Length: 341
Image 1 (cartoon, rainbow, N blue to C red):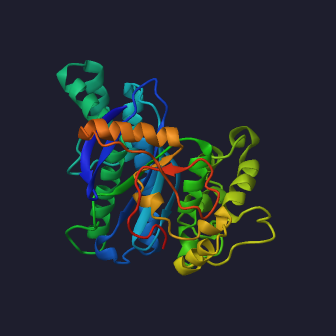
Image 2 (image 1 turned 90 degrees about the vertical axis):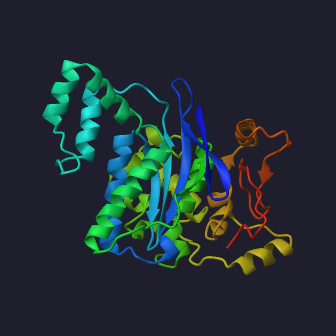
């Protein structure tokens, strides 16, 4: 992997582009509006939803799932290993991103194709410019937020910043158990907010889009379930709903989110809760933990960070609070403030 360290949210984080021959990387990315203002109506959410899919296609990353709320959004991305992109694929992605030329983007597909056929320095520069935006989660988020901001400001007769921060991200081990838990946490956003009782009824999340028949959204969920790709959507949906609602979800659902006080009381009494119940709480480890995964995975990320920061201080992965059976999930960063809300 290629690591580029930058300063985000009070600590250094790595921007990673996955080299050929290495396993895919996965990220939970989040961004909130300035001051947390509830600016997004259904039209804005619909525009952002479409832009997520369009820019993911252009950047060559896979959207596993997402959730768009009134003042923030989440997206779980899988970034595949980097492979050279041919000219026809570059042109296809470019045309998807720029279907109509604008005064800022004047190059037409015919002109670009002729330039690439002719070769030369101009063609190489254009190829390099496009490839630099692909296979990188930072470039995906930058393009997405810039494009949406331009549309939103123009549509609402406003100017200036829309987002409160660059963006937050958590590196997620791309194995099914960890990814499935993170995806369920994202899809349950509207349930935690009290908007719906079942995420399939909330239009602006990946699971609802998959239930509605979007085959690309279905593939994202199917990749989370063991045997999901071979078993098909019906099989994958059944397995995923067990994570969303727990065993026996067809007849019994967790309808209400727990408060932090209720969760603390259960732990104080020495009890544990089903994972489906805990996922209805806000879990800061899933947004501020920096990296989530098995102990070996998180330790490898700690080693990378320590080398990048030239730190000699020993560090070990941190266990999540013992409130449920997390499976094989640890975190890179311990949280001094409350980890649940």
